[in-house]
Length: 143
Image (cartoon, rainbow, N blue to C red):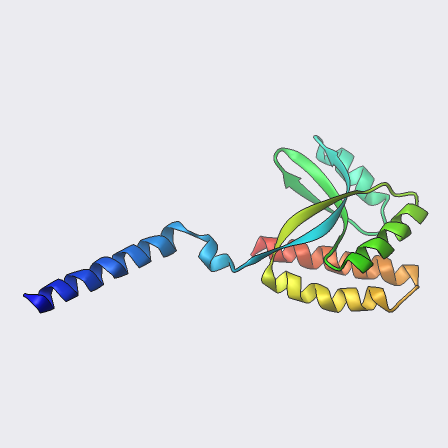
């Protein structure tokens, strides 16, 4: 009798655990982190977003809530954020600074990109690194 009760309790516990894993899909995504995103524009038409993106040195377009959002940078380190704000202002690019959630893998990868940005003053490097960050972000959200 005691053994049967223990077996039933173990199966009930396993059933609850399995249900939590299935219903809570976030358990498979891993922890999310908040970073700073540089939004350049939000458009109803994709062609308008594409026109804006074509005039930027680096950009991506994401569809969010029936809007096409143009991003020109994603960073986590506040010093890099400040440096890049100055860079974009000098380029006459108006940005809206907002926060977004990213995966832990992409968060860790940002360190490598940001080290490059911290150690250079070459604006052509800024553009290439920014596009690398944005491309990697697109890959991370497609997984």
